[in-house]
Amino acid sequence: MNKPDDILIRLRGITKTYERGGESLCILESLDLDVPRGSFAALMGPSGSGKSTLLNLIAGLDKPTAGTIDIGGERIDKLSEARLAKFRASSVGFIFQSYNLLPVLTAAENVELPLLLAPVAASERRRRAQTALRVVGLEDRMDHFPRQLSGGQEQRVAIARAIVNDPLLLVADEPTGDLDRKSADEILTLLETLNEKLGKTIIMVTHDPAAAARAGVIHHLDKGRLSVEAHGEVHA
Image (tube, rainbow, N blue to C red; front, side, top):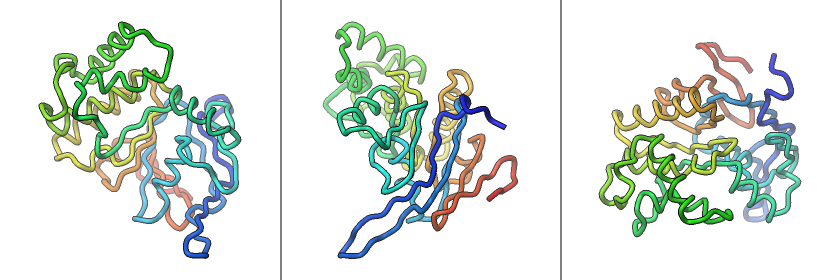
């Protein structure tokens, strides 16, 4: 059993509803979730099951209608928008399916972007960007623009950008969705390395069972209920 200090993410009674056309649409209902520090968790489920909604709540991009979200001892559901923005900048690294790189910036400049929100000198930003690109195996592509990189390399730059602030948590939304199998496997191996060697806690939304199998635990979300699969067994 995990000790309280071992749990990085603790969700209790999470409900999320949206108002559409005068009707209330419930996406998540009374959901509980614990994610241990240093774990690699995959989140799967059918389209419309609320996977991305749940990921956005954990990442501080949205707030629940009801329930509590504790990340590293911080109740982020109670933070103001200004403090929530600071939390995201310092504690969360984002990895998206579409990379979201700025085409007019080099790889290093794209990686530096999160550091522009912190009081970091230009020389230090460059050094940290170089270190992050070295971690993902692209130090020799620092001055290349996104158009000069393959899809897999672009996603590596995006991962370098996600880790440049040394965040508590990495959230990945379909990080291999736009990649061929070989490039996808390379990205998944990199995520495993970040988890196992650097101790990063990772939550990854994916539709791909092969990608999910690389995680230590798989959470299945369907109709507001989570089940957990580990070592081939499913538990409600």
